Image 1: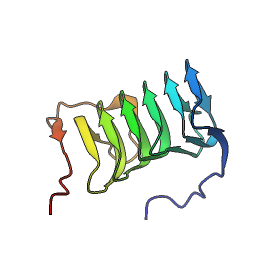
Image 2 (image 1 turned 120 degrees about the vertical axis):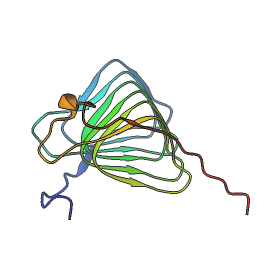
Image 3 (image 1 turned 90 degrees about the vertical axis):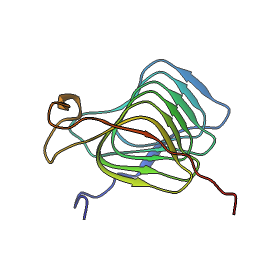
Image 4 (image 1 turned 30 degrees about the vertical axis):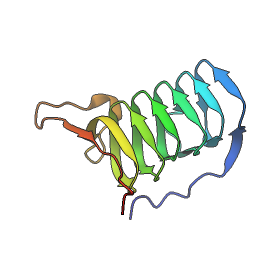
Amino acid sequence: MFSSKKQPAIRSLIGEGTVIQGTLSFSGGLRIDGEVQGDVVADAGSTSILVISEKARVTGTVKAGHVIINGAVVGPIESSELLELQPKAHIQGDVVYEALEMHQGATIEGALHPLSKGARADAVTTDDKPALKLLATGSDKN
């Protein structure tokens, strides 16, 4: 449905309790359980997957093909394939995506910009459509 490309294996891990400062470039698959204070960017032109776990926090730009978030991101996100926001995801920043899956409880404080087929994330223009401003919060008071 999304892509016939096989997802790369996650071979790199930023463990819980680890803090990285600066730009983090990766290829293939990366899982973050710790904290990154800087940009997290997948190599352009290759299939990539980034997992930001429930206990993780990224303060900076996030750019990858398939992005799965269940932690916190403060900064813009660009996903050229699929962006999955799991129930404990909290995003503070604008989001650019090809496809979006958002679970109940996930929050976004920023604008959503869908990519058109074949468009690059950095080439998004808002001349055709206004950006969707979204502040979504889950309520579990049932």
